Length: 202
Length: 95
Image (cartoon, rainbow over all chains, first blue to last red; front, side):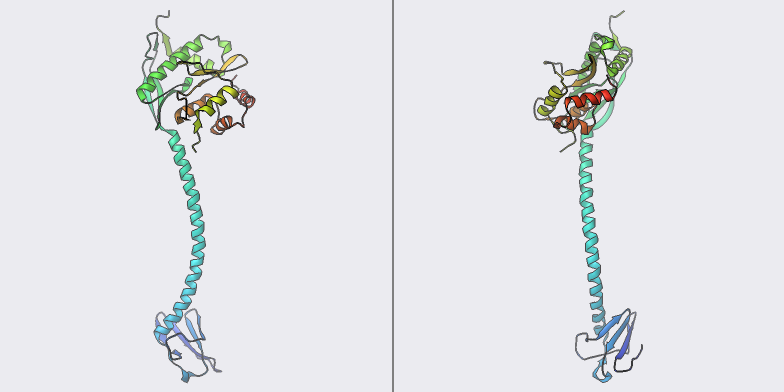
């Protein structure tokens, strides 16, 4: 506690909940002139006699007022932070939606093995591994090394069509002169000649 | 809109008019892209004849054409012309 001269007043200190030697005008409200600075409550009064000791409730109300101002300031700052977080959440939501879209386009991927080409005229020297991709609306079978491809409603249908596509590609490539094939088709031809055997061929 | 959401008519229009592919009728759904008298790329046409091309098939056609997703969309949406496409394939050294 400190005391001031010159009619300026009377000082109270609020130490962690304990009120010491404070005075205040009668009435329920916090008196004008009560100044708060940290934990000190300063009351500017002309005469000690006009006052009665501050009750803890009055001082708490004064602190509450100061606390409210601080709270308001914090709320404003929080509001700004919240606005920024909302914007970030929206941006994140867009990215998640884009990722979901990409995932839906990927389909479910797995491998399958082909042991023959389902064609009397052709057989395989060794089993080949192909890729199956399942989407909502179709199942796709690929043999990427030669870009063979088939699409159907189910996996067995897609595999059967892929075998047909491999045979068709083999026939197409082997019936075309090599100098009439581009870089990739020449590679596909070489791969198919290693993998596919024409039945009855010498 | 998905990255590979492609309308059948737009796709076939781009493949036939820009790339110059010709899909034969019947069971044959493959067409060769020919440059300098050489078969360079083999493109498989979708089985569906209307609406949106299924994603797996659209992805395969994009691979067949040796295009990125954005190039593929540009080919269909017009920014890439037939000669632009030819240049892309030549630049890849596929002839």
